[in-house]
Length: 280
Image 1 (cartoon, rainbow, N blue to C red):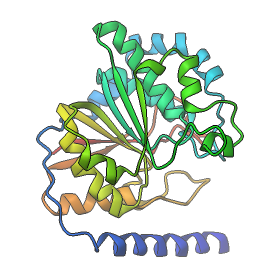
Image 2 (tube, one colour; image 1 turned 90 degrees about the vertical axis):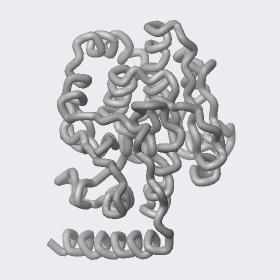
Image 3 (cartoon, one colour; image 1 turned 45 degrees about the horizontal axis):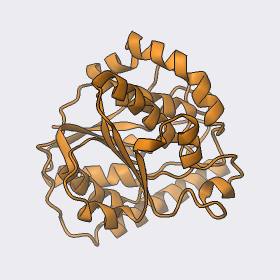
Image 4 (cartoon, rainbow, N blue to C red; image 1 turned 135 degrees about the vertical axis):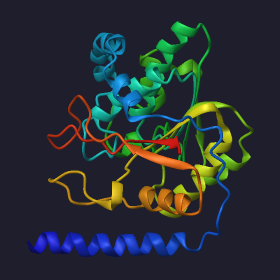
């Protein structure tokens, strides 16, 4: 009981701090016209697509060997979410993708693997840009080294024959996004800072870079800032706070939390913090 009270107090202070920081940011225009209108049933159909299931069953063993990153201490996207990213890339037919937040490259590899299959289907060269605040592939100081992993993100991509269409950029998202010329990204995955003040600014900037009917994915999204897992009562409040402010200001957006996946995710559950940003 004392531990739960302590976590509750820390969470309350965390939320208050996030709201205070966000209040220092002036209102931003948020044009959602390029955003795809996604439905819950469409997402469910992607996750139950038998053709994608078959692809996954063929490639999962190789991906697991190349991306030998356990869920937990590294802060990497958990294995269930990695699989979800693969399905979503394939289901939305994303051939041009932007990822904010590379870290150790677990999500990057699974996105790239799905895009390589999309390349075969479309006979087009895909493009994945992955942005992080540091040089994720640095041989001595990269996050993969700090966490004692065997391979850098670029090395994993080479091992999956996916490196030729992936570009890494070491830059803050709020420095990169405004300067990026319109690239018509099919899908943008926001998994960087998670601070409310940053996510609030990232979303309008990301919308500017979307192709028509493009998709934005959010990670670490906690609806109503409630815990998702009974074994871990902590939350990351920023994405929820940021999207709620945008909606309150009239942005025509809605967030669809993916909730429960058809496969295991983390902490003995199938719950995910992934969410899809859709047009209202």
